Length: 193
Image 1 (cartoon, one colour):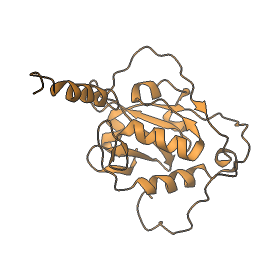
Image 2: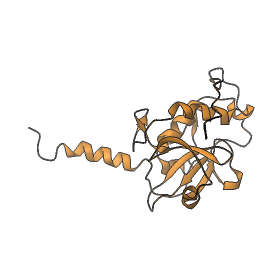
Image 3: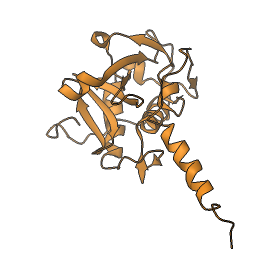
Image 4: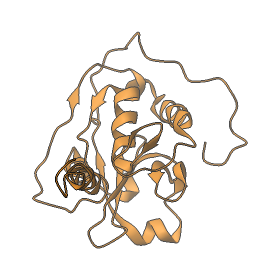
């Protein structure tokens, strides 16, 4: 028979890990650079936004799960990490707090596809998504799971924190033969996708 409290240790460790993912607090502001694992032509040839939307569609319906990193459940920072890795071959840090220090802070009026958008929904909570275009961003919502939302809604305007550009302004990337082509299915009937 395990000693009293032995079952609580793994549960407490998992809870602590989950709390540091999307609900992290801001700390010292030092720039962290993502590591590039491969080059990708999407940034240079203008297909980044459709490729991000296409990859985001693959995650549609996946529920939000704090600390989650796969299709059984995913949190906001894991989603941005996965999309950046799959579409751009970029390794972002795992936690929202660390992602908020990557790249260069930019004005909301200068958003481009692929920029990270950050929110403060609570005093110590942080949330992150990826800007697509036309005021829309993809994120793992705690209420609806992976979804595309509008920055123009009252909630997102009220909780706006910052945006960061991780991708270089004038990227020097070479075409990647492994890049997936954008799906030819017409999803224009569906709002946000």
